[in-house]
Length: 344
Image (cartoon, rainbow, N blue to C red; front, side):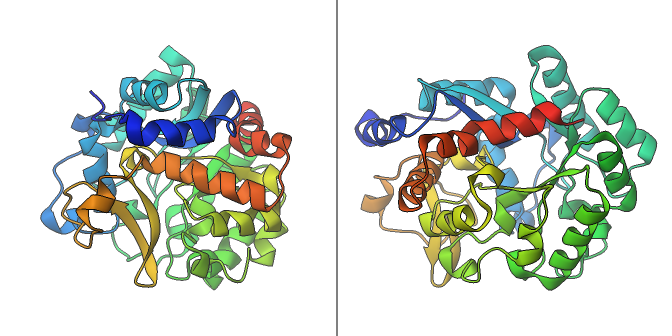
C-alpha cells in the first residue's frame, strides 16, 4: 500500500547503526498527510517545478494517508514509538477544505496533533473555529498566493495580521516556510519574521527546514542573530541530510530549539538531499520528470531511505558537537512533545 520496499541487505545495517542512537520515543514535527482525491492532476510544467515535484512524490506514496504513515513507521522504525504533527498539502492543486477536514478527522479519531492550512484571506472567525475544532496551530504557505512570485513576496502576503493575532492570542503553533531567494539570510524575511515574533511573544513559531540551508555552503555565516535572539522561535531540521548544516544549527541555537522532522512522504524515497554542481539536489532512484541528472545506476541501487540519511546526518552532527543522550532525546522527542502539548 505504501510503495515502501524494505531491503534487508541495504537497509538493515543502516537501521542497526541508527538504533543505538534513537531514543525509544520519536516525535516527527513535519508530516504531510491526505488522500489522493484531495489533489487535482498536476500539469507537466508544475511537475517539473521545485514545488510541483513534492505533490508528484506525494501521489506516488498515496499522499501519506494515515494508514500509510503508520505502515511506514512500523517498517522503518520497528523499535520506536512514533508520534507526529500532521497537516495537509498547502498547494494550489489541493482541495484545502477536504484536506483540512481529513486532518480534523485524524485529530478526532486517532488523537493526533494537527495544523490547519489557512488561505491568505482566511478570516479570524475561520482561524478561531479551527483551533476550537482541535487543531493546535497553522501551516500557511507561499504557493497559495497566486498574484506574486516567491521572490516578490513578503511574509505578510501569506502570514497576514489576523493569523498572527489568533496564533498569539491562543498560544498556538505557526509553522512557517520561508521562500524568498536569500533563504536563511534573506534580509526581508529576517526583518519581517523577527519583528512579527517580537510583537507576538505567545505565538509558538517554527521555522521549517532551518530556513532552507540544505547544504553547508548555504549556512556558512551561521544562524542570523535576530533569529537566535527570539525565545519563541524553533527550527525544524527536515529534510536536511548534511551533518555540516546540522552541526552549525546545534552550535548556534542549541539542541533545545531544534525539532526532528521528516517532511514525509518525500523522505520515503530512496536517496538523499545533497550537493550537485554547487546547488542542492534531491537524489532519487525514481523516474520523476524532475529527476533528470542522476548518479550511476550501480550507485542508485545502493540508496537507502531518505529519512535514514537524515538521521545518519543528525547522528554524525550529534557526535561532532558532543551532544549528550539527553540532548539527542530533546531534538528527537522532548522539544516537539512539549511544544505541541502546550499549544492551541
